[in-house]
Amino acid sequence: MKYILVLILALPNFCFAYIPKTITVLKNIAETRTDSSLRIKKEIIFQTENDKYLVKETWYIKDSENFYIKATGPGFSFEALHQNGQRYRRNSEGQLLKSQDDVNFFMPLFVSNDANLIANYLIRSEILLPKVLQKPRALHKMEEIKYSPEERIRLTRKDGIVHFGLGEPTPVDSNSPKAQAWVLQNDFFITKLRQEEFSVEANAYKKYARSISYPEKMILKWDLFNVEIQTLDIDRISVGKNTKEKFEVNKLTNQAAQQSLVENPTIESVRKFYLKFR
Image (cartoon, rainbow, N blue to C red; front, top):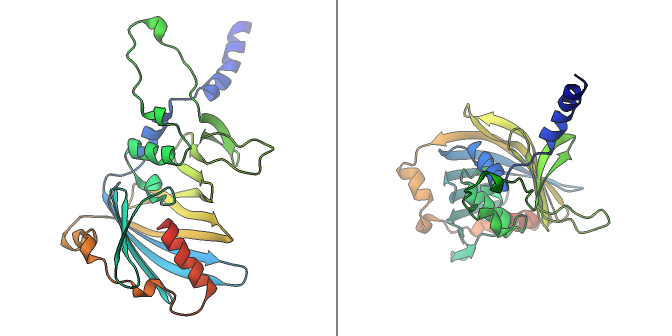
């Protein structure tokens, strides 16, 4: 009986210590997402020491690789199309500009239902290593089955709650935080992303359209700004004629209003935010 009691007491610690393969965690993240096309409405709050500025956003998400965004605020507007890793927008002269999406465009990380796309974002961020996508070799004997912990995944606590920590931990004596992501152990929600130049907190998840889990609020810290991103509503949509037109590059309008219409340092910072993150 004594030995049985010791074994029972040890079980919780053993379970806590087990860490699944990184690709398994990423697949579980993907399974919390929907494969439906979506329309997401957001309110972006730019708060400085002396000023507050609001922008309304509408996103149309066809799938994990196709995004359209329109944003408007007092004296400001922005429109962009992301297709298969490329961003298209027009400048104030109406010229069509094309650029490669980089890790600053973090929206796919929170909506993609493709584990490989999630992995590729984290690899480009240098949070994970490319070998995370390598297929394991076939095993032929029982003795070949061994549990060996992977690099760049660990159990950690964030806000007192157990998470999977992805990436290399930042050394205690370092002033340069390493790029990392935090994933809730039980729900597989990404609650924080940290890059070299910015971080995104997404602690409050909510159900939308009955079954879509998505952050109700995000806090993006960048430069001197704490940008609050509030989710107003999410709808499933069918990709009909009007929606399809939003994903046509030649339909992008001349965004003269992307430039500040009044001399306002906050609006100029808002414009920089959209050029960098959207």
